[in-house]
Image 1 (cartoon, one colour):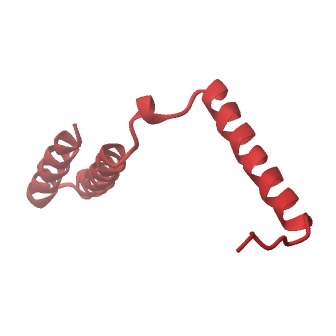
Image 2 (cartoon, one colour):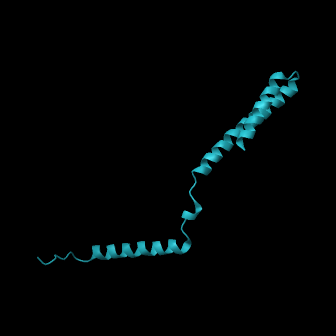
Image 3 (tube, one colour):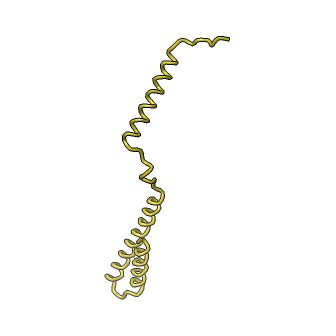
Length: 91
């Protein structure tokens, strides 16, 4: 799709070069500018879309809650271990 905007911009530039009317020249240059901007933005949108993550890799709320509970339990265990006095293992 972005390539159609480029084709439109090139066609508008071509018509602008051959225009005998100043109004037609300005109008074609504006269309060519808009087509060029739309082409560049379309290419950028395609590039961003190609680098987006797959939606199937996202976590569902139940899995996210389970992971949070595991992290909280791990933090609580570490805090309890840090709070207890250091005992020497038997030698």
